[in-house]
Length: 341
Image (cartoon, rainbow, N blue to C red; front, side, top):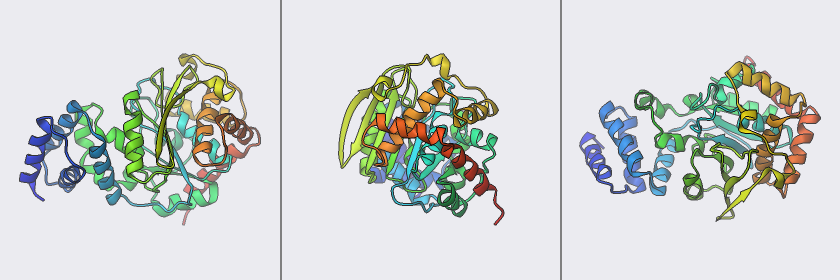
């Protein structure tokens, strides 16, 4: 495929016409190969954003990314807890801490993430501050999952096709289809996930995309306060994909036996501050950050099939913290990723 074909596709999407899955794969393939100009790439992303990305387009784009990624071997039943970012609240690294707690509770976690989108500290930022080596390849990540029960896949190390897009995305400075693609392009190919989205309108579409991609059990979540996590400040909206069916419902922290918090209680800082907060949680300190962490870890336990309800998941997550198992998962991750091979 060549640039003239790309021009045709840009013209098509710019008139408000939806692309088929194969068409968007073609467009992204051309652009990822370096055969497109930055202007063409920016125009394509902007046209999609203004019109609104469709389920077929997101599915096709995810398939293209998955076909180009460097895969990681992970055990069957491994889970990911990940958010799109972009909620603009600057909270603690909830999903990262929840991933460590879930690992401590006995779930194999293959977490995918990147640097900060809307806060001072993204997943890779805070893990680096905790001593985890994030710029490692697939074999090293697989070793970490096997030994520590948790591994982290830093997106730039596993999605080389994304390099062509980085400068364009940075210059645009707006959310694009790639904000949605990251969480659904896990290099370990997990089929069980908790996926946080920055806008409630993406709950069902992302659930449909993940069904198209073969997911087994997924919670796509959004807090009514705008968080791309299950929130403890009030209602959380959930689109659950299970056994091929999608159900939409709401939960509150009280449903899981947890108290409500104020959004101000969950405000984070830079990577060092958030790393310190994670260590405090893993040491067993009670408080709002622990509460939101165990709520999200409970959802991971639920989609992993380890518990039958969110409240039981919270109890198990709390035990993982209080027993020291969650802290041991972090220690194991640090050791495994820094090991000289």
